[in-house]
Amino acid sequence: MKINKLINKKLINNHKINSLKTNSKYIKENDVFYAIKGSKFDGNIYIEDAIKAGAKTIISESYFNEKEKYKNINFEVVDDIRKTLAIHAKIFYNDISKRMTLIGITGTNGKTTITTLLYKYFQFLNKKATLVGTNGIYIMNKFYETKNTTPDILEIYEILKKSKESGVNVVFMEVSSHAVKMLRIYGLEFKIALITNLTQDHLDFHKTMEDYRYTKGLFLSSIEANNNAIINKDVEDYKFFSYLTKAKLSTFGINESNYQLINYKLSVEGSSFVVSINKKVYAFKTKLLGLFNIYNLLSFLSIIDIMGLFKKYRDKTIEFIASKINILGRMEVVNNKNRYFVIDFAHTPDGVNNVIDFLNSVKINNLYVVIGCGGDRDKSKRKVIGDIVSRKADFVFLTNDNPRTEDQLSIINDILEGVKTNNYVVILNRKMAIEEAYKRSLNGDIIAILGKGNEQYQIINNEKIKFSDKEIVQALV
Image (cartoon, rainbow, N blue to C red):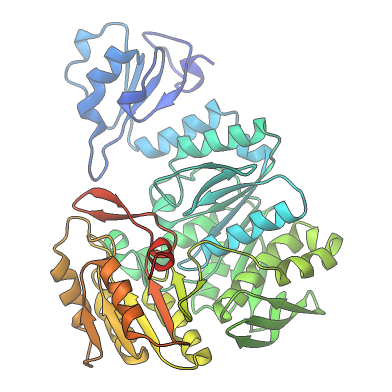
């Protein structure tokens, strides 16, 4: 493909395009370099490095003062470089998402569980699929790491391309609000989009709940009329989201809906529940814990039904839901030393509240909670979480959770603003906090370790240090 296919005008150098790049370190001969100014790095600083490495076209939102030095290089100034990149990528990759079944899950909580359920279900049926999300990228069981819940637009297109080359046509993707706002999914065609819920999170990025809500709504509004949108009927913002979408709308929840929860029973061993699927009633059993996971299963059922799989594989679906489905770091129970250790990613007030309420409903003895809050992130939720855990847990161990560049004690003090009890101790070292929770607990107690889930690191002062809550629990002596 020549560059004039992306930039429809007369250019100094109508070169053949090798690839599109946003990082000058990976530039090769005949690449197009997009100089994006981000929160930490400004791509404009690396324009000359990109040219020296072989870039023949430079695209930026800023005028490049040294352009006269480079007579055979195209320099283009655009109003919105992220949108330009997304449009160019769509053309360069021949609109590949249109020729695939791309399914996106958004919402504050539940994205990882639902996409993992879908991916594992396809494995269960011996069908090919790709998974893109917080726990990484899986293409036909081959694992690839990713830094973001939703990768950048070029990485997504490479994933789609690699999937197609592997014979995979179905992709399940977590869609974060950051990805929507930063146009990482702009121009992709999602055949099905689902929103799980909306509660407080990411206000360091969005600043207001209105902006957060609007950003999630933008994703739904981008779904084409001949495709499908699925919304949780029980969320406060249901009407807002339903007004935004022009796609074929389906709903799930306890309120009257296409996938309606009729009845349920929870226990420490799992749940049983009854669902009306388009007016027909079905009973299910699952080893997944909590009402929030029943909602995740409603989401899962709505998607596979719209895909035509529930009707075709009804008995296999019931069998799959009843099987032991391991979702790393999501209500993951590790039985060790006669205790129930529950490892979960819950890091929002709503998520933490849901987990603790469920564990309180099934506990026999005491509930201990190990928790912190991430540094350089939404500070407003810290005291809310402090209030919830101190009121609802028998004892709390306040500790680190990716403090990043923020002062560790400052984060703890923000949490303590919401604490009105004395049932807590501060142990900044997360490993020591988990060990102390074990030492204070007795046989049969539940120890919930919240906030990090399956993360394999701690971020302290911009350094990623290997760390796993699960490994700490398994190593207890």
